[in-house]
Length: 90
Image (cartoon, rainbow, N blue to C red; front, side, top):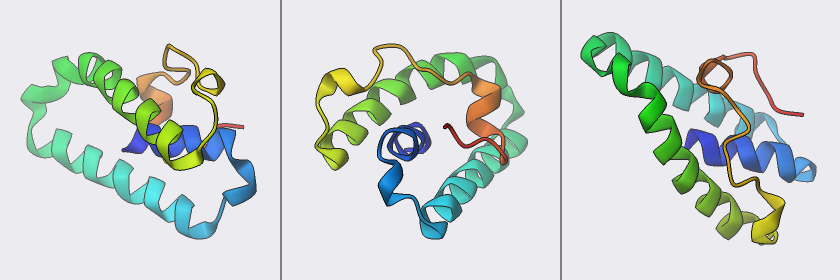
């Protein structure tokens, strides 16, 4: 869901809000906690990111009603950006 919200933040900027920003922070906290509690998952984060992008792209398409072509086929964010609490795509 994090990646879907990042896409919506980037491509539907008219709907940005503090609530939306808080959702991004909460999702990042959950990811950090999951990886802290389960360090053995760390080697799989890039694989998980690729899968998360497919799901997130579908979510963004569904929730924004923007054309599929609006969203890149490949994830425009790297892992470090996605989990960085200060990163908000332009």
